[in-house]
Image 1: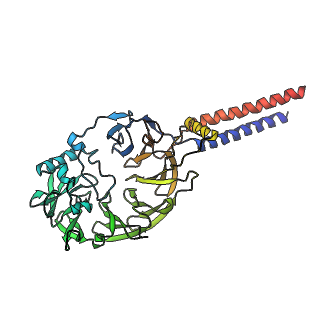
Image 2 (image 1 turned 90 degrees about the vertical axis):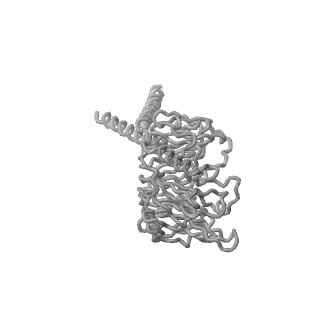
Amino acid sequence: MRILPSRRRRYAIALLLTFAAWLAGCWWLMPYRAKRTFQGEKDYAAVWDVSPDKRAAFVVGPNSHYFDLIEGKSKPDPRSEELRHTRVFKSRGSPGDIYPFVWNQERGEQCLNFRRANGITRASATSIGVINQDSLRGFRLECVSDNERFYAASFKDDKAYSWDMPGRPDRVVVIDLDDGRQIASLAGACYPVTISPTGESAITVSIKQNGNENQVECRFVLWDLQAARPLREFPEWNSDEALFEVIFYSPDGQYIFSHSSITYADSGNVLTWRDKNGRRIATVHHRVFRSQQVLVDSGRILVTDGLESTLDFYDVADGKKLGEWQLKESPLGAVRGYLIGSIDGKYVALSCSDDRQKPPSKLAAWDAELGGHLNLSENRSFLVVIDAIERKEVARLPAGSAQFSRDGTLLVTMDPPPGLGLPNHPNISVYDLPLRKPWARIFGFAAIGTLGCGGAFCAVRWFRMRLGHH
């Protein structure tokens, strides 16, 4: 009588251990659960931005679209035709500034009103068909602050300057797009570079001729917009060897960042940031051309990419390095892509891909079939999500492009665009952050696996008993 209860206990413990093993295995294999997944249109190429209310995403491709993240369908474009084709750049060199006023149509219309009143057109603001050395140097006649509230344009003799006009601009005018009010006229400035999101200051560039047209001195100047007076010059930005400059403010306007790629060998990228008065806080040298950087945690942490798929983390306030994170070696041989971050959240993400082709095999076919059942992408593009505060990897998600919401509580991903052997209608997935596993599915698969193992054990035991009787 003692043997039977003991055997039952052993069976119960074995079943519990089997269930725990299946639970751990399913948790490890099961991908993170998307809150919602939709099928996009065939001309969708990449997720560009997420709306402040997190209900829509701006998707680019041959045509730009507004995509409803709740209902999973395209929305009508609320912008006017003129605003839709307007190109007003943000920070100098910023890669994400070619679609202005996506979520701020009222400010966009205010900007258009100012441009119309001063004769600024798309043709006059660009250098199409005009050979202008300053335009070739990358300077622009107008810009808008990163929060799209303030706008600046170049003027000469009280008229908006265009690239086909003789000479150079003699001042820069700054207006507040909330009410159309002019807040500053910066005499002596030629071209706007970037504007503080608070409207307290701006950076412009002035050109001083040294001999012929090709010999000039570029003077980058920080202005106090309230007093319309220069605060500081940055002669270190004036080097002719600076091949690529990016100058931008932090979201709260308290810090100014700049980085340049130097043309001479082994110099790589120089990243510097200062306080709002222009005093230098730190300088970082990277031996990589045109490194990327993002600000997270409400602008308190700066994340930059370096060599060998590493990310470096810095405290913006004092410039101290907080640590680094390195992409672990992958059997796919990951190729690093772009870097994104949540402005007010703690997450940063690095896109990776591998262009090498898998050799055809039965194992590869089985792997693709299993990936389909587990809702895994068959493409080789993935997104590594990292906690910038703890500097550790959180998850890897299949994605060709992605964007965080500003508060870091939502992540929107999209499959790579057509033309890579993938479906013509890419999936758009919406994830809540922190990421969650599909626990109902995990428990379900674990229960099925445990029952299968238990059934197989009972069948083997019954078969052995049958053989014993014979």
